[in-house]
Image 1 (cartoon, rainbow, N blue to C red):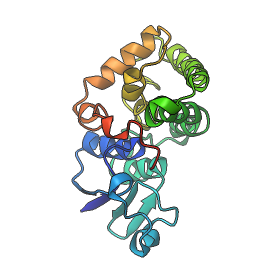
Image 2 (image 1 turned 60 degrees about the vertical axis):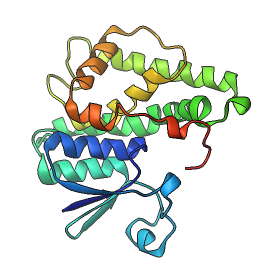
Image 3 (image 1 turned 120 degrees about the vertical axis):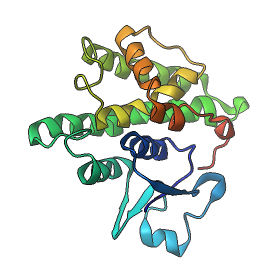
Length: 214
C-alpha cells in the first residue's frame, strides 16, 4: 500500500492527500513533521535527505517534493486524466505547477507566515499588506486565465488545479484584503464542491496560529 509521510496541516501534504482521494487510491498516512517531529531520524533521512514532508513510498519507489509526487502518482495511476499523455498538453500543466513554486508560493507562504504563524504581537503589518497585494496580483492573472473555463486548463481538473488550488482555502480564511475576482471565485467554488478538496484542504489550521516552528 502507498505510504505518505506528513502532517495533515501541511499544505504540501494536502496536495498529495487531495490527489490520492481524487483518484481513489488507497494509502496509509504517517504523521510526521510539526508537533509530530520525526524528520531528523536516520530512518526518515534515508527516505528524504531534506528532512521535510511529504515523502511517499510506493512499492520500491520513494519520492519527495510535493509536485514531483503529484507527477509520479499521475504517471503511474492517472495518466491521461490529471496529467495528459501528449507532451505539449502535459507541458501546459507542468508550467503552471512550476509557476506555483517559483512565483505564487513565495507570496502565499510569506503571507501565511506573516499573518497566521507569527504571533500577533510580532506581526509586521506592512509585510502582510505587501504579500497580500502581490498575491492578489498573482490570483488576478489566474482570474484572466479562467475566463470561460471551469478549470485552469479547460473543462476538467488537472494537476495544475491541485498544485495551485491547495492555496485557496487558507487564502480566503486569512484576515487580509482580497481583490474581487469573479472567475477566480467561481473556480474556488467549483473546487469546494469536490469531496476530496473538502476533506483534505478545507480543514482547520488553528493549531498553526502563532507557531513559528515547522
